[in-house]
Image 1: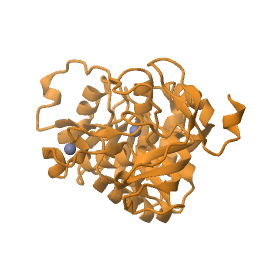
Image 2 (image 1 turned 120 degrees about the horizontal axis):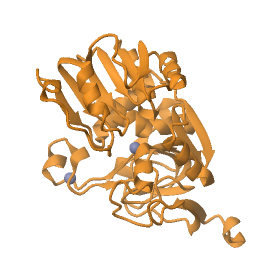
Image 3 (image 1 turned 135 degrees about the vertical axis):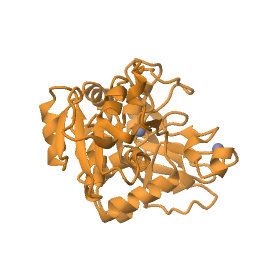
Length: 340
Ligand SMILES: [Zn+2]
Ligand SMILES: [Zn+2]
């Protein structure tokens, strides 16, 4: 690395994806200035999401390359752009996946900005938080200081928590017995939210993953077992977080009449054909895409009232590839978090 840049206050580090299925490259760059309505943050922590893995693995179309991944960013405002941003230098803020919306499409106008026709997602359309600094649109940044936790333990709330919250909403308030398929970063938070709401959680892990089943029980799950097992009671709803299509018919089989199955991931392997009787009797199957700022507001207020136990495995920024590999191989309990 160029020594002149290392010592210079205006240099930043970024882990850059140049092409899918290649290692991230550590680059030194000039620290950018925020434009009107933007903030420059010094990144304190950035959690690693399964979506980052889908991006790096080329399982999603890549609209911008090279790109700095990372969309669960916690940082301190270093500089605010010329137009009023609502934030001041020194504020602790979060940057989630939804980084920009058009505000004029039918979805934006109808309270469904998560489905905006022309969105910009953090770490996908614009450089994200696998870096020492990031630029973000202030209108999509979230104030975090009221939560009183440190950056490492706040970062996983910004996607795992938020998307989990939206999935839980989609599962329905009446979903008393809730199945969670895949017990990673999102499920470990949703399990705690659901338990705080006095729901019963049934956690499904990879078959034989006794350590994760034990982890789920420690976080309040009433039952934990392999995804090849049937739960001891029929479920009112299930959320599928694991990107495994085979889990969809398994989840439909586990829910009662009128039950809901919600897919929470951005990518999933193909869903195998299944008999219509699994969907019959008014079971429903849907997906959850992205988040709205309303979801963020509601979830962060809930997290303030009921602080979740966030389990984080930290990695230095430069070990982003190792964090991604550990996530790919199911070796992380809770969430992986990069610290620059
Ligand atoms: Zn995410
Ligand atoms: Zn829009």
